[in-house]
Length: 82
Image (cartoon, rainbow, N blue to C red):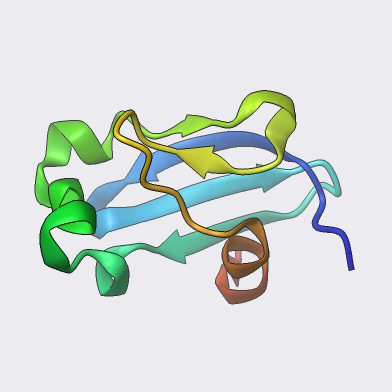
């Protein structure tokens, strides 16, 4: 299944991301379990974590140094906001 485009990503407290999809769904994804090791550990810096941005075309998200999370992981593991 192709993942719907992400229209907006917003960093939240406690290393969570709010993701708004073209389907009208909004999901919250917990990044904390991914923040390990040297590379993903950079996300522990709150200012850096908050610099998350959309990939062109809404196909995913990324940070300046190249960290990203697979779009299907974001969609499938994100908690739907009611």
